[in-house]
Image (cartoon, rainbow, N blue to C red; front, side, top):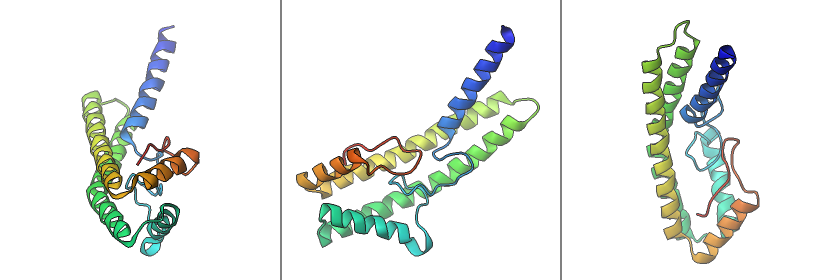
Length: 165
């Protein structure tokens, strides 16, 4: 019984750590293609340009709106990129500690807390982006964007859906 409880606790803690210390599936460093700021651009920003073109068409963005959205995206990427890099390093360090014969629980807890803080900062950048988008879009465009996200315009594998912009 004790072994079963220990095994169950270990499995739960592994799942909790994996979910909180990582923004992408294990072994991947970004590339989700979503608005989370993950490294999504292919050669010369192809994906970003395609997303912008699709958004421009779907929401009928004006030239001024396109410029404003691009500035918002650039600002978010500038904030999120170093945070994602730190999260990646944090995830690797935590993974190395899990592989050790003897667990250094205090070091693991510290890395886990740092991972939570980094994830929160990335979430803050996403929130700021959405607030900015709300200011840029008209009520009709916001409604279209929300309907698009709800209908199936969801992004990468680790996203759980989209809320209103």
